[in-house]
Length: 497
Image (cartoon, rainbow, N blue to C red):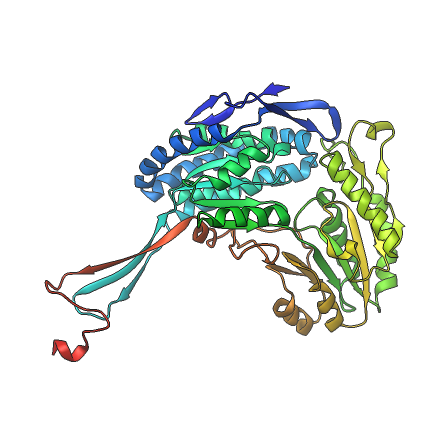
């Protein structure tokens, strides 16, 4: 067990709240990973004061020089990959294989963001007036408040933090309470990479710290990943200050399987998409939409593969499913399983908490399958965030698309088909920010845009080149070297003849 402090101005400092909270191992709740400050408004104010001064200086550093520090951060993450992955497995229960991938995504993002500091291109365009330049360029927003979920405690923060720093912003980061120890590793990495003090700050905490970040008038942008309802509250609160807000929220992601599909490949995708990270990804496959012509064959193959899932210690290389993050999340899953049965869906696999023997000290749930699910059911409509898969039978491609789109979310989607027409139409018709053809709903890559539509987000895209639209503002510059007053929209070409 370790006691942590906030990281502000390049130093680990005590919180001014005198309150703490614990992060515990969901595999063994007796193990306390760390004790953290439950920070308050004063702590956030301290971080803002430091960040304001640091950001002014940081913005003057040439972007490629900022990129060199980010590249070094990526190299340090690479050196510490196994150490951080093991901490992550203990803190959030992610299997070691997936934890390593989480760190690798942050490494990839660091290297990509570093390269992009040489490609923060501006636009130069002809002016409508002679002897005049017209151009636009990216400028940093100022201080970015970053608030993230627990399930990707290194990767998702890196999607926001590295591009924000590359663009010349300062950052105040509040990790999810359940992923605080892993999130703290970013501070150590950036400090060792040579980032100037105050440019990156961590304020740990629960609701008070997050609310203070959202409502502080000097924090000009909020980048949030988490639940849809929380995201709506953040959006409303930030609107009072006309802040820029980037929201990455929930998902209820469908995988469609059509008759022409390679069924063995589609089964692989459904197993990984539904039960990887124990279903605790915003991109997890939670709805499996099967054409009636292949329904029975697919389900027979699928059920035969379910015993391959190994639920256990996430530090064991053989484990394929770890625990649920905490008791409230486990109880939420149990409520939805009960509700699914009450609504008339047929529970055909799993559906129970595991609590005996090696599971006695943690939060565990079986992989769970419902069949005969209808679109009006809550288990079809709501994000459960656990290993619960709803299976729906359809009669046609058109019905499959209609069913896939019949939810309020629109993050990820998948279709398995070898029909080029179906694949092409799915790319156009699926209401989602991401569509996979013959691949599961999980597996985003760091150099491509990531985000969703409908109630999954508010239009911004993390990842790739598009993330810089979040963390920069466009400034237009006119340079008139004519030596006389020129009036746009008033002077015409004949006036110059």
